[in-house]
Image (cartoon, rainbow, N blue to C red; front, top):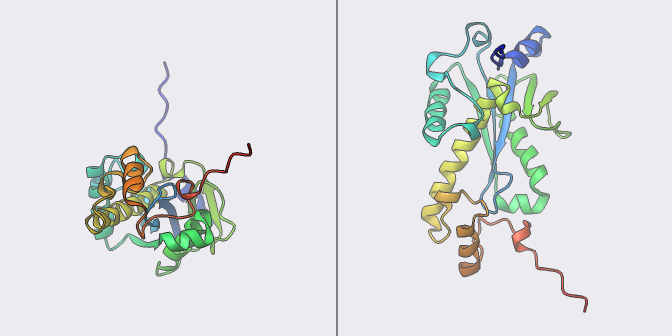
Length: 218
């Protein structure tokens, strides 16, 4: 049987650079689905010379954050943020704003805020998922992009680790809910804590758990 050739996770970056679309940023988010906590987005510009040389040895194995262990995510986060040649921005939008403008707009707001932190500014972005109408930059939307582009994978790691660390801090502030374990997602443990203690300021009031059931007609 013929082996599949390995996926080139710099293919989208090379295409953009060949068309002069640089500096180029990968963009991804973490925390759209949880019942509590912020949504976090990251934007990452990897050095253009890596497109030819490949990733440094210490970043080999970089991938979609969901496919990495917690220890791997922490290692890649520390490596990416310690390298001066890697430029990045990370932004959070809190639960109150999510309730005010809805989670989709809050996610896009966080993405734009993360991009705004890049110096010099990116000219184009690679975005995980669907196109973002409100994005301040021209961009290329890539379905499952966090597993198909190193730039997006790096952004996914920065967003995920940042959010997980925040939820661990919130766990110490609000110990009844178990935020360090489930990161705000609607696990049975979390739902039991909500039933017993009610919501805290981190909870998204606009999410389904908060909405009362429709009364019976008869």
